[in-house]
Length: 253
Image (cartoon, rainbow, N blue to C red; front, side):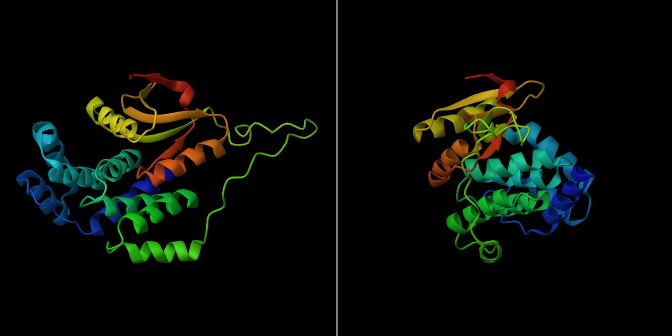
């Protein structure tokens, strides 16, 4: 039920958020947008998939952003839509669609009830895109929400005098920070290189049972430790999220 609500949300938002066209106009992508305008969503999805197979690996920066934005709008899988939106934010800071992507990520987090994640995305939108038409909406949300609570040190377990395991109450495994998930190894390696150039020790992994290539940093027992690193990453211009399945990783590089 939750997945269905998320899909409906992304689908409706995708149809009404205006497009910011890049400088390069791909005929196939223009056709996709025309089909969306006509309400022919299934056909638009087919045309876009064919375009990705034929031209996706060879296109320039603007068309790649535009195609990621369209794919995020058209996918039936909310998790895949979120991955493409994160790619726009991480790979194309200041790009033509990155402020739109941050808005949708923030709204998706709101829908899930994750106000801390929504706060992070809205803050990144205000900070990185002050002239975006979405910035007033983000500022209004942030003003109403107020500051988010900083994570506190875990309380001592009763009768032990030692901090309790922070995963016990949250049903978490080892914690890691994920900065992107890609269908191609090249995209993951590129982001991994950007992180290493910025002074972070990153890795490319796959999770058992999934073919996506994920870029991650760190391995923590306490969420507070991960949040400290996330704030460093944010100051360096990298969006990230906390994941709790680090034990299922298989390192690629």
